Length: 190
Image (cartoon, rainbow, N blue to C red; front, side, top):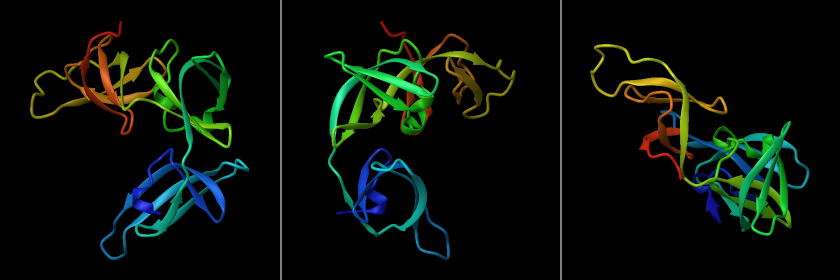
């Protein structure tokens, strides 16, 4: 058994005898009340979604899932297709990829991990650090050199993030997929 605080996004817990995929988990601690974890859950059997609140020390039973390395192939409307080493295709809806969707771009070569529950693919995880190219960023503000100056930028799929003032259009950067934040500049992938 794990506490609610230990459960992370893309993990699965058995709640009331049903397997639930944790799509989002936000820890909140207010001054007067006890700490809580707000979770967005998706039932793996029915596909229904819900949001619920757990106390930090509530016990949840984690479910062990099968995992296979896959690579992104293509998308058609809201269906994303991934392929394993044996060329088996796995289709997922955009709703099932909520956590990693901002980092999926055409032509990406990053290895992904497909997560299975009872033989059905339910989610895909990316590596914790990925390299992407900036397709848009605003110009630098002249004279603003006080501290860590961040500006808005955009990836080729439209995902927006904040980057340091010295980054320009065409630069390759490392992104932490857990937080969606800029890490550092990078060399173009080979």
